[in-house]
Each structure stands twice: as C-alpha cells, then as structure tokens.
Image 1 (cartoon, rainbow, N blue to C red):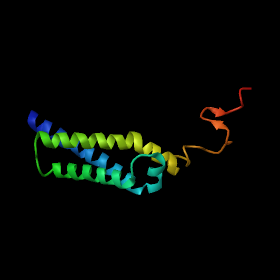
Image 2 (image 1 turned 180 degrees about the horizontal axis):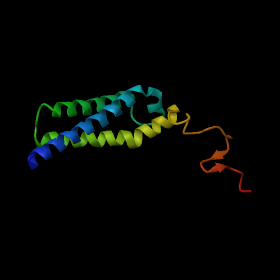
Image 3 (image 1 turned 30 degrees about the vertical axis):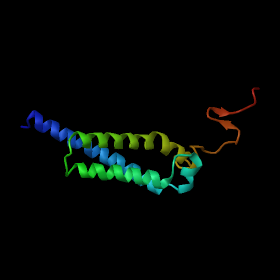
Image 4 (image 1 turned 90 degrees about the vertical axis):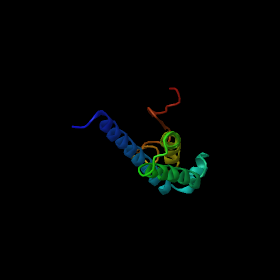
Length: 125
C-alpha cells in the first residue's frame, strides 16, 4: 500500500509528465508551422517560439533527473505560462493564417464569400 507521501510523489511525477507532453506537442506544432504565418500575425518569430518551447521541454526533461527545489518550480511555472500562451494566443492566430483546421481556412465548408459566422449576409434585408 502506498503512503501519502508516495501517492503525492506519484501524482506530482504524473503532472510533470503531462506538462512535458503538453509542451512537446506545442514544440512539434510550432516547428511544423510556416515561418511566414508567424510574421503575418505579429506573434514574434518561428525561431523565438521554437527556441522558447525547446527550452521549456529541456527544463521539464531535466526536472526528472535534477531537483533544484523552488528555483526549478519557478522555471517550470514560467515554462507552463509560455506553453499556455502558445496554445491560447499564438497557435489559433497562426492556424487561421496557414489554413489549418477542419475543412481548411478557418473551418469554411464551401458557401459564398459573403457568408458570415451565422449564415449568409443579406445586407440587412
């Protein structure tokens, strides 16, 4: 039977593993996205985001081998913030420019160029 400390340690390691996978997927997506999409959305550069997310992944991998105490947790928290910013702000903007997503180009599935998000625009008639 696991003690409370062992259970907490196991949950913490599982949480760190989830964060590592979250950052690793963001790194792969960031590396696969075209450079011009970053420039078109004014979201820094591809090198910046790939470098930052690569550093975050390196910190998370290093955390499995070295324990630096509170400093490590602060750096991991900063890495988590950077990863969340990528997922919430950068990826949707870049994805809209590069035509990714369901059906291509912001989810459009045919229709007229005057179609709005809730159907065709009829000019107020």
